Each structure stands twice: as structure tokens, then as C-alpha cells.
Length: 255
Image (cartoon, rainbow, N blue to C red; front, side, top):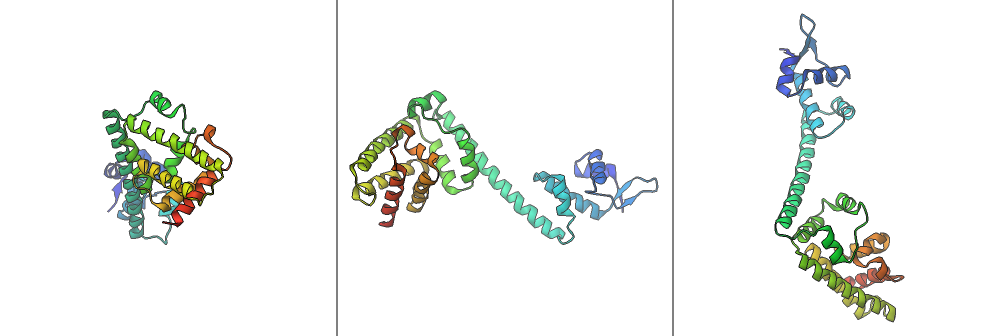
């Protein structure tokens, strides 16, 4: 039994012009023609169209879809399994986005969202580098640590941020004093600073384990921009990031 192009368009929810285009580029060519020469689609054509539309919905370009559905080594079940995997991944990302929006809405309703003026007031003019938030979300957005941190930050009031910033500044003052006094990163004083550092991280991301803390401290040296979130550029002294990293390593090793 053959299906005319108009019937197929109605079943698939696409336009006749779309089906004509798919035929013209060789993506989906109908198996037959009616007596009058019109396109006629078979059951197998409809199965292929379903796969095409699934991949299109997932954001694949038509050129890539043509390669995927045209591979004779891939059967229909394999296509469905792959599409299911991709859809589950998309659902997960969308659920995380919804949760993030919900947290932002709740924070705004409760007056916990800091305005630009409040951020300047709380952090003394410090702002994250342009594009940093987008890059961070791209790199770590799928991790539990990132999600916990977003939830924690979204629940903090302005007073919480003020207290956290005051604690950070006091810690930086003690850090600078310890470093300039000549104590080593394996000293009891340095290890105490490392433990305080872990506590500060926990304020923003929930419980921070030693493995996570160590990875963050490593980034202070490998990616100096990360260190500016902890110690502003005008607060830093030469070798300070390495001192923190080594103190965190020594403290974690002894726990």
C-alpha cells in the first residue's frame, strides 16, 4: 500500500514542501509513483521518515542525518536505542535547566538575588571575568558538585554573602601573614588555613571533600583566574597560589 505525499505530510506533521525537499536532496526518496506520476511512500519509507524526524528533533543537521540513516549496517532497533539514549540525555539537561530556573525564581521571590549594585557593594567592585559563568557552566554544569553549588548559592541571602565575604577577607589576611612569615605549607598553621579553606568552599557547595578541595586548589596554579575568586589580584603575593595548593595537599594527605 502506498501513501500519497499529502497523507504522509499530515501523519508526520510536516509540510509537503519539506517532503519534496527531502526527496530532492536524497534524504528520503519515495519508493514508488502513482499512475499519475505522484510520489507514493511505502511502510518502510515511513519508518525511515520517523528516524529522520527523530534526529532532526535532536538537532542533527540534514547532512548528518542522511549519513546516519543511510548506513546499511545500522538496523532500526539500533537507531531507536541511539535515539532513546540521546533523548534521555536531553531530558536530563532540561531537568537541570528547569531546576536552575526554579532556584533563580525562588531566590528573586525571597529577595536573595543580588542586584549589580549589591554585588559591587558586597564584593568591593570585584566581578567575574567576562564569559566566565558561561564557560564554567559548560565545563561543570553536568556534575553533582556544580548542581549543589548552584542550589547553595541560590539559597543565600545578601547577609549570607556579606558574612562569607568578610570571612574570606579575614582568611586572606591570615594567609598573607603566614606566607610572609616564612612558615612552610606543611606547617600546622598552613594546614589550619587549608582546613578553613575547605570550610569556605563548603559554604558555597555543600560538604566539600578533600579530593574535591585538592582539585580546586590545583586549578589555582594551572588556571590563575580561578585563584582570583578566592584571593583578588590586589591581595595576592608572589607564590601565594602555590602555597595554598601545597598546604591543601599536605592537609589532605594527613586526613
